Length: 129
Image (cartoon, rainbow, N blue to C red; front, top):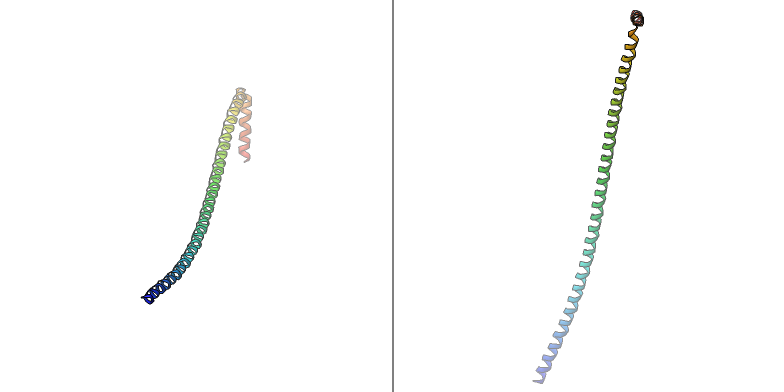
């Protein structure tokens, strides 16, 4: 009976040693899994940061391109408006010139001798051309 009891105790101690070794192996496996998970997490975070920077850079680039297009469109619109204003100004100057010429000529033609002289000069020019 003592022998059986010693055997039971030895078996229990041996089983405890085996369990302790298995726990040690499980702990090592868990530590390795945690280490691998941490490495994987750091890799995912690094990829996410890289992707974020890439997206931000693309957004900045698109924003700059759009701003350049808008600036160019504004410059083009300003150029057309300037051309339209200059054309309008030239037309007004031409109208003023015609009005002034009409007034000057109507004063000139009041005197009939000047009128006859102008007609003769114009006829002479036509004959030479």
